[in-house]
Image (cartoon, rainbow, N blue to C red; front, side, top):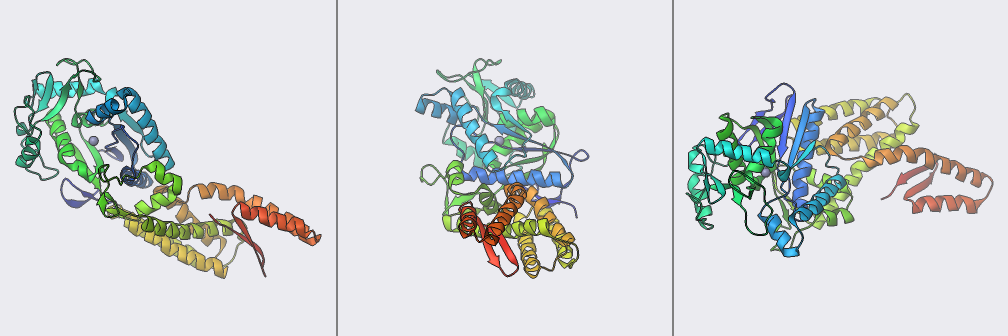
Length: 468
Ligand SMILES: [Zn+2]
């Protein structure tokens, strides 16, 4: 089956076909680096990380670019508030953002593009818009004249008068019309500035994305993603800018938008005091549990965050992980013979997982498939009925799709080292017991327990498992 995605532009689930061959150009709106990122951001970036990884898994060659907004009103405000230059604010919080992404295993982005490193591209786009008669200069600022782009609002289906109504509140005397938006903002005292044909100033927000995406992808590309609150006016404005410049539509073939993350039923916001930073969350939770928690909801649906739900997710994830550990453990000591039933089930699970992901990247459904396979694996391992091939087939499913979802990772590496080490210590303990050196035997058991490895003496010998 081919991949189908929900396209905000058409309002339909459509078959995914890249514009050119096998190559997928994907752009996602990045953060404004004026503060630490919160878990609402994490939700968006984990969702698109998995989308990029799944596309790569399907065999597409993905080029994934994310912009970094390192100059805008919020950056300047923050700089004034804490008395640190905008440049340093940007460095500090970009580092913080990249650390957070690394902690969460978000690593599919190929290129982060800073707005301030694309000023020539931004200026070229604004000059072109002026030449085409859709933008005008006024007192050193440049505005896009929304009325000159008749298709404005095609993504959000918002009408021009709604934009006008919103803009009227912040009426700006330099603008011809209230709905016009800034492409270039003239320099004010103490603000960072760049030279331009209109004097000193800095770029507006929407044009930064089009400058970066057209720089790397050219005039049209495959996927633009972001959180759904960016559809209007941000993404509609991007379309207006790009299509006015190139005369080609659609600027982007598939627009994908992720749902919100709400805090205990409320929108997360500074004024409500319910903002939870990624750093704070990672301090108290394993990153894989956070990913699992987010991916266990479809990317377009809202997530309601609270501690009970997160705790439930942890317990559920550990159940899955337990099955994976069990398979890894069994694989190390498995022999030939036994039944292939689990292997057949694993092949079925493979197909069901792909079907779920192909239907608008339904990670929730795909995870449910993994739970079914975990149940069958646990049963087969308890009965000791599975053949070595079957164990490998089942484990491969978890490892392949764990790679797509960013789950079951570090355990794999440590388990590879852990198995022989624990076996060695178990042998030493047996030797001590044979020599009736109970003190040494107990010491090995107790020290392993401190390290989280529990030994269980049973009638078939000694088994071990990990606790976290
Ligand atoms: Zn953007």
